[in-house]
Image (cartoon, rainbow, N blue to C red; front, side, top):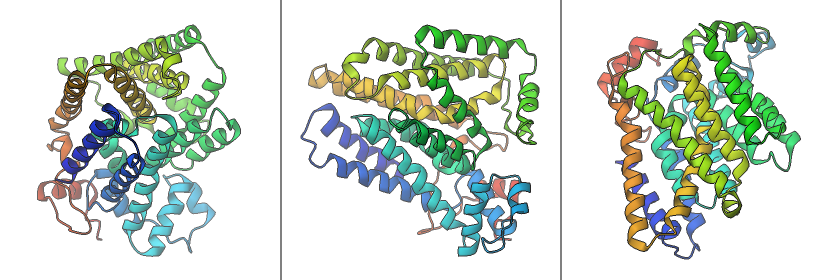
Amino acid sequence: MIYISIITYLLFIIYKYELNGSPRGFYKYHIFFTYLILALVAGLRYRLGSDAYYYEFFINNSAVSILEIDGNYLINSMYQPGWLLICSIAKYLGHYLYLQIFVAFVSVFSVYFFLKKNTSYVASSTLFFFIAFYHYFSVEILREALAISLFLGAITVYENRKNLSLVLCLASLLFHKFAIFTILIYFFLRLNLGIKGFIFIMSAIILTIAYFEDPLIRISTLYSVIADINFESYALDGSMTIFGYLLYICKIVFPLIIALYGYIRRHSISEHIPPRIFYVFCGLISSIYLIRIISLPYAERLTNYFIIFVIAYGATLLILFFKKQNFAIRNIMFSLVFLASCIFTWLPLTKPNDDGLPGYSMYYPYYSYLNPGVDKVRQARLESRYGDTEW
């Protein structure tokens, strides 16, 4: 019920203020209130998400208090130092919930400030963010969510404060190993490539990765120069059905379409969203999905860092296009896009995962610490993986 209420509220804001042009006197208050609710829903959730479940187990059983932490613990642990420090503070305070609330507010409000800074249509961007990424972002990938939050901040300040942008990218390494790619992206942007240069470099990368029979081994070898790590746990199932291929073809084509449309209209849309960086990220995410299909399934994990850019860019262009239509057409068209987005995103979540549970089961039904409850099937599956977190 809480998810339906959030979607309904966002649709009200979009239809009233963004599509149909009502005065925006209370618009910013509606947006802030929405993000406050999103942060509370994520922060107060009770045993939702497999990663969150494991981190609760980690704090209760393996983490040390901030008063007992030492350099050896930070260096030799499987987690990055920034994450260990936060876990140690939660351990000292006495409950995993403190960690969960902190991560929820930082990650959710990083999206709020990013969208507020970079697009005129925050509500539409938030709606599609909620449909496509919010649950995974705020429930499943706590460490990576903090790294992504820092990356969003880095890109937001990139144009005016490049040194701070680099510092934020470096800081993201304190929370997740994949954040190494944020630094590569920073220097990639500094090249200031044109469209032809960008296409040439991405084509060379795709062809190089496709050439190697098992690129994961070579990537692991290169990364071992920095740290001793095993990437196999991040590998995805390389087999794919016809429906799966169609799904990924759509994921490849859609960002390219909005990038092309945005590039053509770049001068007229610049007052609503900064176009150059956004269509670069559209090209990057399409390239990653293509790599995922042809050679390296686990590469899809990198799209976590770019998907919010594509959502914001696509939502902004959609609203600008719809506003040119008459009242009936723009509202009907937006409603159809909204329904199609729900189907496109949520239908794959009905497929059972390795545990036999559908993908949505980690997010629904929703329980919170204010009204705790347990889905017995989900709880049994989680305990079979990690044990009882109350140990």
